[in-house]
Image 1 (cartoon, helix red, strand yellow):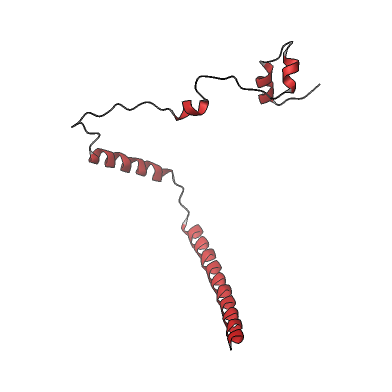
Image 2 (spheres, helix red, strand yellow):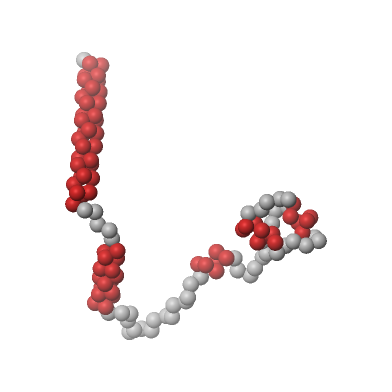
Length: 119
């Protein structure tokens, strides 16, 4: 007995029948439709054309809505504790210091090497 994944079973299960044994060996060809799925997904609701002199929401309403959404999102943020912030800052400062020291030494060696080659 052949084991088939659940997704494959549902896709192939619909096509099973007397003729499906011949079709199962070849690649499955999707049924053609008038519009492709990609075209259907990109098509959104059509906006009504604005008449001259007609405006959208006032700027203050849009700004107020935006700021409300910002506050809601900021309430969802999990802020690190003071101890976590200090530890992360310490690690970053140590890495930056070591990187600066390494790059400074490499620069010094290369400049000395270049100075010896030129003179």
